[in-house]
Amino acid sequence: MQKGETIWYIPDGYIPPESTNDLLSHESICVLNCQERKAQLAITIYFEDRPPLEKIAYEVPAKRTKHIRTSELSLDGEKIPVGVPYAIEVESDEPIIVQYSRLDSTQPELALMSTIAYALK
Image 1: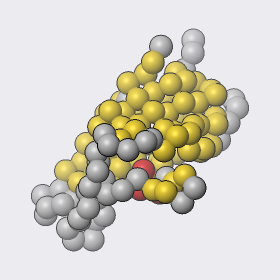
Image 2: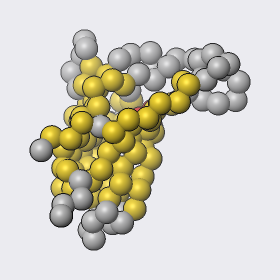
Image 3: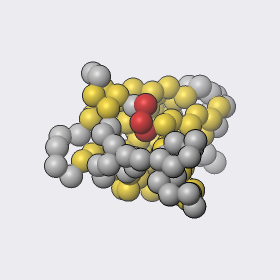
Image 4: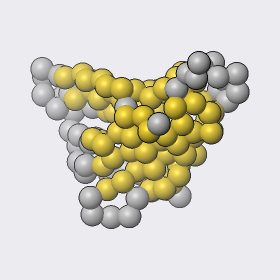
């Protein structure tokens, strides 16, 4: 039985420009690699009004999990801007499982949401 897929999509990304209290609003691509080999990821960020940030490299060791904060991703020094909608494509050379989480602390009643990404089969 194969554990995971090699292409995943997250259509709704947004890094809030403000936070309340000490908790920083953020988003994470949560990756689980159940394989015996490390997974080499290529993460592409799509925007509504500009070219994508294509194939940002990331590595997830074998039999490990990684929580990748989208605010820390960069390509040639360019990062995802805050307050701008975006979408994510995660490609991997090994089957992986991808979950997406968002902590929104723009108001005192913060919100946390998480969902499994869409896997291309």
